[in-house]
Amino acid sequence: MTRATVTDVTNVPDVVVDRQQIFPYLTYADAPAAIDWLCRVFGFELANSYAAADGRIAHASLCHDGVYVMLSSEFEQLDNHAPTGDQVATSRVHMHVGDVEEHYQHAMAEGARIVQGLQDRFWGLRSYHALDLEGHRWSFCQRIREAPRAEVEQRLQTW
Image (cartoon, rainbow, N blue to C red; front, side):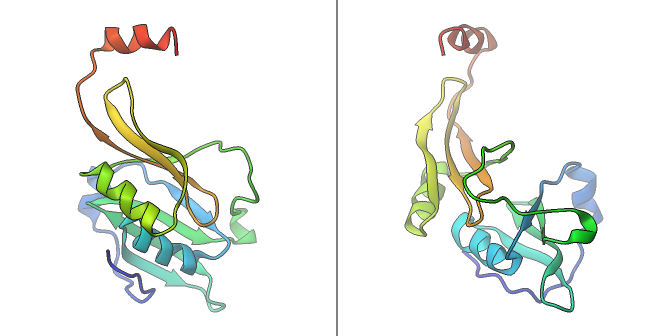
């Protein structure tokens, strides 16, 4: 896994924007630490970063297997704030990865806070949930089988 540096200021290619129309955008109290942590623990690579004069990150894009997430430091001008404490999760970033077992083992070895361990889900995914260093919830999964809609709907009735 690549360790992040906050020096590359290349832009996300237009072809990516054409392919990926929705980009999760997360806010961190310490965005430089978040960039390093997300690269080290979850396997992202830093695509670009723009720093303000005081060192806060005005914008950064991270890439994982061709899919991007964006983040920044807190800025009052934008009214964006990092999570505080153990608040109730109202959203999460959900990602499909090539080998969820390997991803899970790596995240655990790096000290990620696992909130739902690796599980086979009746809807055909194997997944786990983790919190990042500032409390954003992430889920990582891999399809393990095709689950017929009728089966999923039936299982949901007793879930």
